[in-house]
Amino acid sequence: MIHAEHLTKRFGELTAVEQVSLDVEEGEVFGFLGPNGAGKTTTIRMLSGLISKTSGTAVVAGCEVGKEADALRLRQQIGILPENVGLYEGSSAYQNLEYFGRLYRMETATMRKNIERLLRMMDLWEKKDVPVETFSKGMKQKLAIARALVHDPILLFLDEPTANLDPEAAKMVRETLLELRKENRTIFLNTHNLDEAQRVCDRVGILRTRLLTVGTPQELQTKLFGHQTVVRLELATEGLAAAVRRRLPSRRVEIVGNDLLVEVVDPDRENPEIADALLAAGGRIRELSQPGLSLEEVYLKLIHEEAPAA
Ligand SMILES: Nc1ncnc2c1ncn2[C@@H]1O[C@H](COP(=O)(O)OP(=O)(O)OP(=O)(O)O)[C@@H](O)[C@H]1O
Ligand SMILES: [Mg+2]
Image 1 (cartoon, rainbow, N blue to C red):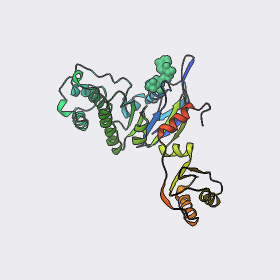
Image 2: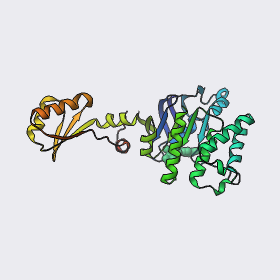
Image 3: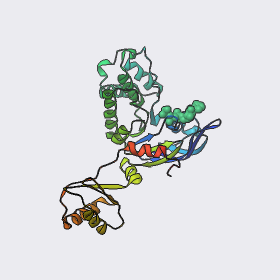
Image 4: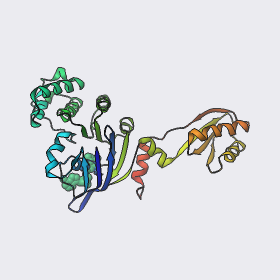
């Protein structure tokens, strides 16, 4: 759905996005993470044809970005929720969507059907005739997402859809994203919210002008930190640690209190070995677990590393 190679954007002296290559598959929710000024918005604007790229290539929804002949088709296939949503405040929710539908030259009956479906989905149908200026931030954000969907795009670019929302409104928007994913739309999502990325994204990319890494949240955690198995014992002893080391010679084993921390590569294969070695050595296991690291830890590690991991 998105194929970018060496995508680069310079604003005069400043390189905002450098040599970004990435692929996003159809039906995927792809999250773009990175600190302020990392180039996330610039990337979305390039991929959606709102600004020109300096160099590199991108094919989005089968259209070549930057090619005049593909520009209109690209615009029809994608929906955008920009950083600043910019609704017509004096107009009603319905009028806002209708205006966009007409911009896309939608056939009236299809447009009306879509508008109703979207407003109902966003829980705004009852408010369809109310001027937008009376809406709360969350309602406006949902309306702006509806607007990005009026022309039934197959690919959605959402630039921080839950920024500035209270937890409840953010939750509503996230649930909406999960609904959209069920419809098999592809979603490219910029976010600062790591918890959100972990919950709704199939894969995430971490950007700091350059793309530092891409993977599923789980893959990133494993890639950067490896796995660790924590065995809570009735009594952790050097003897038990030694028994595990003999069974898995190349792995790091540490005692912390009555916990044994064991570095593992393939937990499905190695955890039974660990348990077996401990039991054979007379250990009494209270609990064996594989605590996951949060995406936040992965993110902070990457962002603060001097030399970005390729
Ligand atoms: N039109 C522009 N002219 C000049 N510089 C720009 C322009 N747009 C963006 N930049 C610069 O490009 C860099 C990347 O900005 P961008 O808005 O893409 O970051 P971002 O990752 O979206 O940040 P944020 O998380 O704050 O939204 C910044 O240094 C910004 O100042
Ligand atoms: Mg931005």
